[in-house]
Image (spheres, helix red, strand yellow):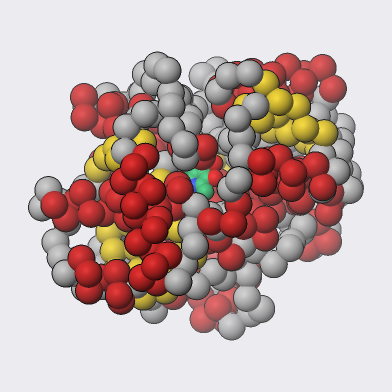
Length: 401
Ligand SMILES: Cc1ncc(COP(=O)(O)O)c(C=O)c1O
Ligand SMILES: [Zn+2]
């Protein structure tokens, strides 16, 4: 086992060993790493590390229905999450979001089986809460003394909330055009907010510099292993809510792509656990035409994406010109038989108004991109009208402005 970046040593020897976590593994070169110290990316290729669990053992000891009867929230899957001691779980009630039938929308589109996973119900108003709950809990457990992350907005607000609840100092670096609601939220939670000119990639460079200078843990998307673990619970819930099967299509608004990586991992884990079969949904990543690095790579058959020049879109969470987990996202989409597509901001605006007026759901622009993408798939004949499809409504409409 190799060691990697660290701050202080573990806060205490874990006592309650109820997590099946065994080790970390590089998503690219498969080198194993010690999971019980703070790690960032693989030192040899700087690519994401993924958490691995003793799933064969878990298969014989865990009962999916027993877990499902526990208190609502993502920590009901605690044995399959990375935190060893329950005392270290930092929770604000994230997860167990509703999977809503979108009947009026479906009728207007002439389709059946359209569902929306309403992630805007999460603490701080977005699915980023799941990832930060897992990452902050594990960082606390392993003795981190401070946390820093770049953010388009929502991840920073979530980090500030969970970091505060854990009693850890938080620094959030956002592009200066990040949504005001997220900036204000982060500040109210007591985070140090640093605004930089430029894009999330520029914020990322500044966060890495601060992390090195101040010995705080960099919890950038997929640059530490555990945000993806929180996000994977969306995949567990999907299976649970559909009676232990998966839908035919999942449409997801992709920036850094942690949700896709996490959910794809969840589906594999669920199958190894014997909780679902081999069928997988086709994964569709939706991006903006103004920032579509994954779509370009998908179309040109590349495994790695080139940074997207002059990235521009009003959907702040999709303004991500390059993603460190690009190959994991592209591998998952391809293995699932899905695709990556780009939509215009104007299509997101229209979709947002449609979801609100037909379904009573006020979602963020990124979330609305899923409907715009789905409409495009239908028009292009890439999805059948009766294919059961889940739109990931990743954030609340109340967040912007
Ligand atoms: C509401 C919303 N949806 C989608 C995304 C993109 O998420 P991911 O980085 O997991 O691709 C973000 C990221 O900021 C977001 O805030
Ligand atoms: Zn590696």
